[in-house]
Length: 275
Image (tube, rainbow, N blue to C red; front, side):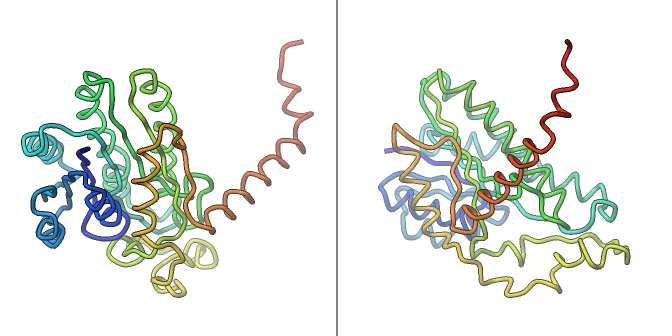
């Protein structure tokens, strides 16, 4: 029986992962800023689920949740960094205090959690870290540049972390989902209060009032949870995985165009080497 520590379990992918982990017979420390939203999970699995409040913007909250989780179940075998939200607006429109909050939740908070669970995992020479990234880490989407930057940072550091910890018996898996039917375009979507008219035909089209069918995404969060729980239990697991048909299409098109650009400018690129 493994013990999971999962962030952002009040809805969406985090809840899907928690449900799948608990259904498999594992234990789960489920977290959210408002832990009262997790009562139904604990009620269904009173012996194997524990709900804790967690604010990724507060280091003391992170430390308290990790330590309390260890006391409840004796340790943490699998960390899932899922909690996050998006921030819309052109690069120029962004309010930097809001950008700092975005990075704290989507990047620095997860890094703090990773740093706090790794000592125990290194000691046991086992464990797993699952970081929920986004297809935005593959290519940024206009009007959502800062979210893409935060997810790209998490994506990149996950690749390095995987190389550092694999010899220690610790798995690291990065998940890049497409559009999943969650509250992402509702409660998890923040916007810049600044609006510059010159961006009305570009960045402004990603704002809430211009979204078409904002809650009709193709991805099923419960299926995402099931796939993640199944994959991390395998010896041959993916270090990085796309989830969703839209994610496959998006990544394939993006990588193809990048290869075409490499070939187009190859002779120029080679001009910078020493003779």
